[in-house]
Image (tube, rainbow, N blue to C red):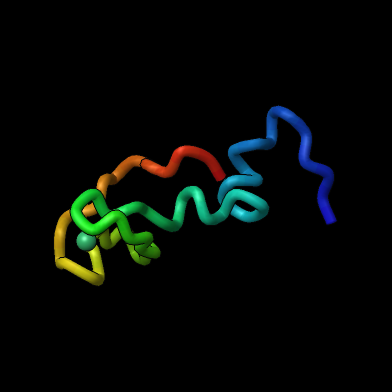
Length: 59
Ligand SMILES: [Zn+2]
């Protein structure tokens, strides 16, 4: 168990509490949550394009 401190926040995002933040996107068309795998930013529900950048209000 690693102690997360301020400067390692980015690391935490990739591996810990905020994993969701980098691995999912909200579909702008349907408002549904999508899990992004292998940098494939395609909505599984409507085949639309998902935003490359995080678009949830918070994690
Ligand atoms: Zn969609």
